[in-house]
Length: 157
Image (tube, one colour):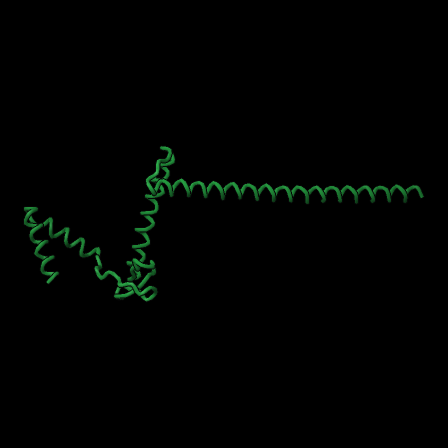
């Protein structure tokens, strides 16, 4: 009988120990989730703070020198991104509406989304290269400028 009582006591102790361990794990998990939530809140606030500093920088307000340097890096990255997006549009034979920023076919005269008249001037990279090659063919820069002015006048007619 004593053996059975000892066995019951050991099973009961093991069960209580397992319950305590699982309870501790649950409590630790809850605390870790709360920590992660607070860390995420901090990241979000820091992100928003950074956005506010950058917006101030863009509007010409004074910012700390280190922050200004970071803002300049962001501005350069934004310009690079915009250039890459324009290259994608060029590859797709699309352009961006200046009114609503919709991507539209290069041949459209009006934006199908907002109805704004789309700029008809299409600057092609091949045309830019031709103009620069033509200018370098002339020995005198004034002659090149006069010739380009004549080309512009012919296009206007």
